[in-house]
Image (spheres, rainbow, N blue to C red):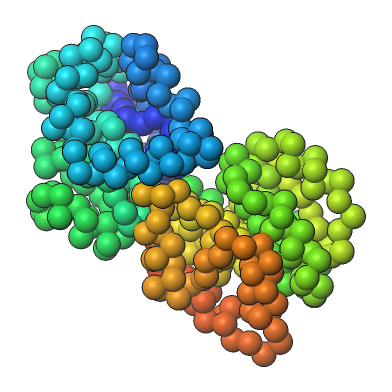
Length: 373
C-alpha cells in the first residue's frame, strides 16, 4: 500500500506550487510507485468563505496594492498572527481542514507555505494525528516568522541567511537543515552546451543572448526594458518570456525590432532558454534566481516584492552574481558594459553563480521526507 505525502500549500504566487511539484517529482523519481502525493490549494479549496477568497487577493496585493502588502508584512512580523489571530480563526477553519486531512490520510505533512504551519499543527492536535510534519521554506533569505514553528519535525531552508533567521525565530538548531531551493529535475539533470542549444532554438551563434523574464504572469516593466535593450545594445539578441500575459506578448509581437528578438508566451523549456543565454533580466523571485545559479547565469534584477524578496536582491549583490536596477535604460547600459569584448565580468559572475547552485536540492529534500515516513 502506498504511503501518502500531503503538501500543504496555497497558490499565492507560483513559487509554492512549483516547489511542491519539484519535490513531488523528486520523490517519485527516487521511489517509483511507492508514494502517493497530494498537492492542493488548502486555503482556496478547504477553508470556508471568506478565507477561501484570500489566495485570489495576492496578485492585487503584490501589484496595485503593494503598499497594503508592505504594511501587512511589517505589522505581521511584529504582531505575530500565530499568537494573536490564528487562535481565533483556527476553530472556524477546523471542520474543513480536518476533513481534508481525514480524506487524504497522510503519513507525513510537508508545508511549503508560511500560513500552513501553525494552523495545521493545531488541527493535527485536535484530530489526534501523530505523524511527521516537515516545513520546506521557499523564501530565499528574508523569511517571515510564520514559516517557523518549533514543533515541526524538520525545517529545511534554502540558504545560510535563512537558517540564521530561523534560529532567531527560535527554531531548534537540530531541526534545521540548509538544502537549497527546490527546482525541477530538468535543471538538476543539466542541459546541452550553449552552441547546441542556440542551434536547436534557432538563435544566432555569434551574438550574446539576453533573456528577459517576467515570471509566469509577465510581471514588471518588460515592454519598456525590452525596448531599451533593443534600441541601445546593437550587438546582442533578445529573448522575451511573457508568461500568461497575452496582452504583453501581442504588444511585443507588433514591434519592429532593431536586433534579433524572439517573443515567447508561457514556456516549459526554461532550462534550455537559460542554458542558451548569457544574461538573465528578471524580478527577484527565489525560484528563478536559484534556477539561474544552476544555469551559471549572471543576473540583472529589475524588481522585487517588498518583504520576502528584498533580501534576495542583497544576496545576489553580496555574492557578486548580478546587479539591480529598476530603470530600463540603466539595465541596457549595464548590458553594454558587460558584453564588451575582453570584459571578464560575465565569466566571473557565471563561476560565482555556479558555486552558489544547489541543483540536487529537490532530491535532498525528497530523501529527507521519505526517511521520516
